[in-house]
Image (cartoon, rainbow, N blue to C red):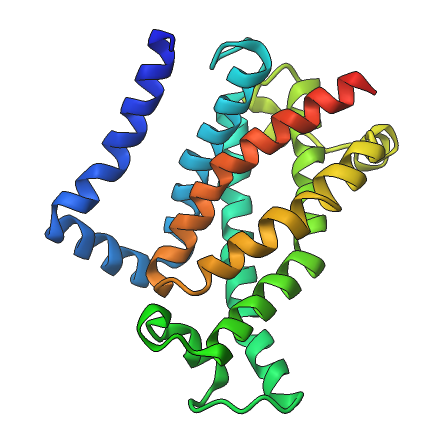
Amino acid sequence: MKRSDAFFVLFLLLIFVPFFISDNLYNSYKDFNSNFPFLISFIKFAILATLGELLGLRIRHGKYFEKGFGIIPRAVVWGILGISIKMAFIIFGEGAPRMLQVMGVHFSVNPPSAILKQDFFTTLSGVQLLSAFAVSVSMNVFFAPIFMTFHKITDTHILANNGSWKCLFKPIPFAKILKGLNWKVQWNFVIMKTIPFFWIPAQTINFLLPPEVRILVAALLGIVLGVILSIASMKSRED
């Protein structure tokens, strides 16, 4: 392990450990999360998902920082994407259980989405598990492919502008970037493999957790996404 790896792990510990050792800090986090859900989503994804991309850079090139990588614009983009993920959590978290109810599944609570607020590890409710799975499947089928492709477009745009923060204010040439994407990797690996085999199971588990920690866990999964994207990048070079 290099010294930079130790600093990276230490930084992660400094972010999370205080919340586990201080009840006051954790309660303050829950209050802030409740009062400013979109702001906290921006902050969490801007930090954690960007860290995931830095980890991906470490995997690809053996270092966490590289000229032209564009940490600042990536953090801003991830923050905005974090807001969209929070929106998706609300939309699919409310809609998928209602869909199950319309399909004939009996819910003991009303609205049906309230079942996702129960402590699953105490109740071990099959309907709650089915609801979490329905949320994850619907969100990953209808939202995730667009989300992943949009992220790839912004990533390409940032790199094309040498990581300058000014790229945030430049029009993105969507048609040009879409035409140049390696769809063999983007579709066959990023979408068709990571969604069914990783994201759907991971988000199913996430929606069984307490509501106040779901966006945090989703942001932590952004670190995993950084690793996945680095693998996809290496596959693109191989092709």
